[in-house]
Length: 248
Image 1: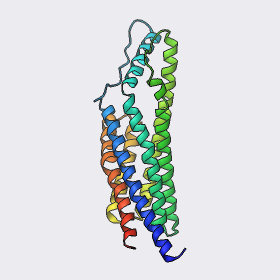
Image 2 (image 1 turned 180 degrees about the vertical axis):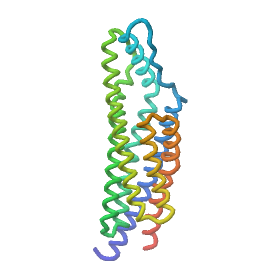
Image 3 (image 1 turned 90 degrees about the vertical axis):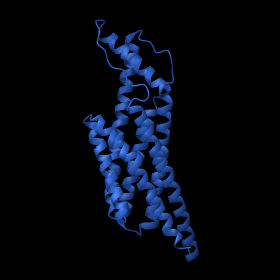
Image 4 (image 1 turned 180 degrees about the horizontal axis):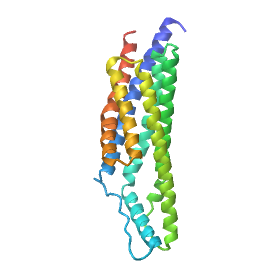
């Protein structure tokens, strides 16, 4: 490819990087806010489990009916955030690829850590899709506790799917944190600090979730998903776009 062709290709990758960064940043920001609206119970909160004298099966059936009805009421929120999540993840993969093309220069470190970030993005998309796969159930109405065994079976299955989605998300956060920390050494000072802060936020969120520290998780998620990650993504996109504009 001649010099003009190389320059045009780099400019196209620069535009793709800026677009991918904008889409990913917007998706992460919106998904975080939608999740926190649910987590802090601005929407209907999770029902408590109540023990009565009716027996364990009856109590469980009543709980799972109430939980299914609650999920039905907020199905719009779940659908929005878990569609935006995979879109943001795909855009992040494109951004990582653009970084390799424009700043990689064949260096193993850049390409390897960009690959790790892409794997983390895929895991995050998978976590969202696994969770939202239950939407068909939650869109139903008329949940009943009779017979108790039916709704208990549905509830326990839903719990298992949710646990799987949660653990995929934890794996995604830790993988993304590792990728960002590794890539940080190849960034300028401002973006390096943002990348390390975002990586730290992802680790703190994961630890808080695993230790059931809800307040810490909510704060770390807000700071990371609504502030640090969007700022980092937009900064990366703009940096790549500016680097190609100089070549014009």
